[in-house]
Image 1 (cartoon, one colour):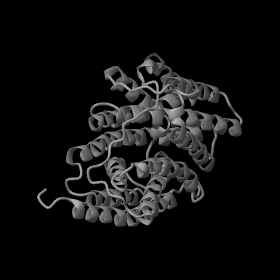
Image 2 (cartoon, one colour; image 1 turned 90 degrees about the vertical axis):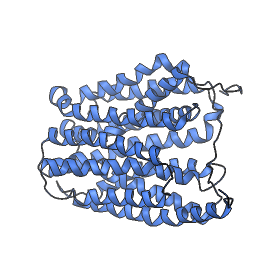
Image 3 (cartoon, one colour; image 1 turned 90 degrees about the horizontal axis):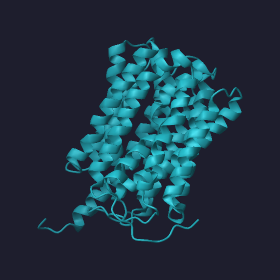
Length: 392
């Protein structure tokens, strides 16, 4: 099914709206993963470990198709792929309703993730083809986080009324809303790659170290994010209090994501990366044991702020490590791989109703990512300064 090679027109406003909508639909379950895991435990009878594995397998589905689309997107018609993926996500979520066999349920979660992976890949690529991608990526991040805030807040009430059926029906119906806009997407995978002005070609060893940092950072995120809801309830808070805190943290995440767009690389990258990684680790250190509602809310907001502040700086760094953009492609793969590994890895260290080891495991991976990212970032900064004309 080879797509015809034609010159790709600029993505218009309708195409941007379609890309943002599909960009929100792609991670519709992952972005509310703490609430989804809570539903598996409370409504479907999963224990904490099996819920973690179910969350992990869905991210593995996203990872698998993200990797495949990286290599094969240019061979397919985007509109057909997006239509098929939207239907796959919808049908997989619908079939999860009433399933009592956990193996079948987990298989369906993998299929939902497989459809979501191509939606994430193609929607982000389409936003990258717009006339002002920096601003438009900001809009995309904002809507993803706002979606997460609203849905996380409503999930406990939905569980109380309908168990897991209500949320699953929503996750099945939401993808269908994008079908009328599929025609607004480009028909093929021709793209224009932009090179960072300060990009240099780092040695392979430093590139590998950077990719290890990306993997470790998102392993840490996968470890912590999937269990934040259960960490809150185990700490003595009600489900609604936890949901409210996580909702507020989504708004903190919006502020964190917009900060890099405001300051760019004005202060270099190693400083904001150090602050962001350390800030996320510090927040998790204060989410151990039992706590009151206000401290929990404060620290999950701090955590989400630094997560969404650090992510753009990481991607910006990856774009500056070579002059052909390949490191970014591999970095996105490491991101999805880390998010897939994290929940399953966390499930291996859980003790009944205690999540201290989950927090410490995530903190350890944050520190590994910081140690790995500093050498390539500092080397890139030195090389870029050395090649910059003296009069600039």
